[in-house]
Amino acid sequence: MSARTARLFLALAGALAFAGFATPAGALPPQPVDASDQGGLAFVLFAIMCGLIAASLFYMDRVRRRRTGED
Image 1 (tube, helix red, strand yellow):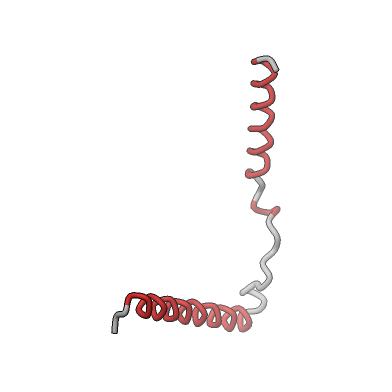
Image 2: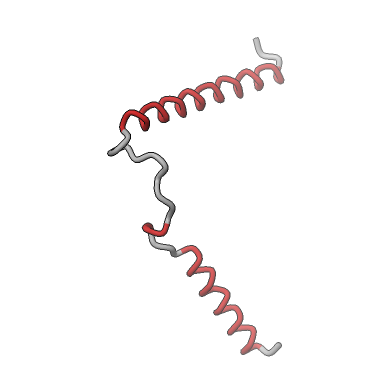
């Protein structure tokens, strides 16, 4: 493979990588819950998510304390 072919290949690979990452925002999948239409459901799902995050932080701290022997 000559140097010119290698450069062409790298340029093509770079262009394809850029095209793969530079998608417009409208091309993303739609939101499963839209707060403007389903405000109550969005609030309930947000509250569940916050509860799960708090519970996971509590659990991770508890596991860390058990491993280190802290009381």
